[in-house]
Image (cartoon, rainbow, N blue to C red):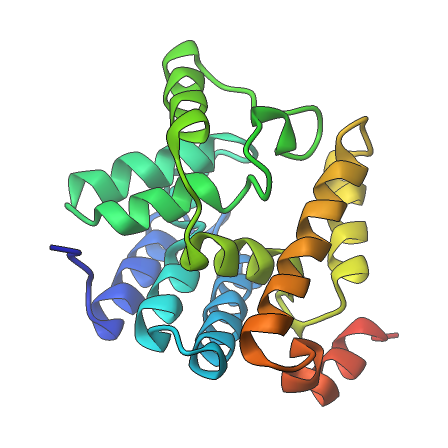
Length: 207
């Protein structure tokens, strides 16, 4: 059985994370999670997926930042937190969302860095998992969701490069993200940019 929190419970989990570390869980990060959730819900509904599940996955994909440390740890931190709550499918999303292709080097800034036991868990997952539509959807949402709203892939990826830097795997990651968009364009029978046309124009070209 796929155990999931209700929407209100998921919102409470996010709110608790913010309350636990108000300095780190700034408004932009919380809003990024809500944008990804809304993106995932909208695309899921158009593509015939479970929009409620997609929303919850999007809302909690970054919940591993609840302890406050920056960077890579949030992947493993979210996995362990959601596992402890028996939300196994959300735990999976916490691992998969940062790896649009299944290689530990897909994480921005030179690949995932962490303690040896964390790396073992992440590498084992990446070697064994078969991504489903929800893994792919949250990966794409994370690649298009700024805190201000949904934007062009290129705009969000430039923001990430400014934070993590450009490495030998950046273009491979971009190619994987473009492939994800093409996948959901086909699933939805339309260019998914059109689902957010006005928002993308406004957010992508903010002064």
